[in-house]
Length: 277
Image (cartoon, rainbow, N blue to C red; front, side, top):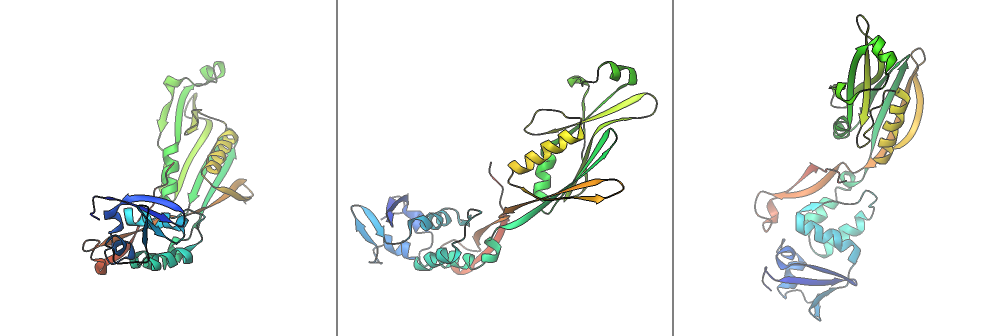
């Protein structure tokens, strides 16, 4: 069978269709030998190669052959079984990756929201163990400002879209984010109002409690769970909300100094996994 031909496999009752070149990604593997007719345990039945193995786990085997990348669901736990399948097909590079089980298992991601309410102003500081999450949150949160005279504000306390100006968020480090909302007076009679918007919600909110509620809802939708609430500072009454989610922060993929056929020079590396929405 040439590399340009389509190969059909029946693995434990599940049918898979792929290019022959994909199955020959590692020429020393049993799948490559199967196509060459050099492994008689795999039988050709009605135009399909029958393999008496686990079809569900073969999904990950085939995905690895296609991408040279090992990406597993967050709740995946059958590492030993998948490694046994990799050994059966003599995919030694995949078996080596699976031996690094501690790198593959999901790890808890911690995020902490500190909320301070002072008269007509509310202050937020978000800490995260994963800088990518804080970076994403900084892209969702927008702070706006509006300045108006005290008299005008009393007559019309609702913001005009044209008068709102975006403000940059404070980023003390890669792991935290600071913003605020509410009203306060600057020099003279200038009343400064700050609004916060959190995508995808289009509203611009000025009330700190409302912003906190929207922020919590956003984090819950992103898979976080509220694990604790506490008061950090008794004098200032800083409320602290701790969140946690299980996240697989990295995907293992295989690169080689030589071509994939020369697996002896293969090296294992890690690359960040971007969450797909």
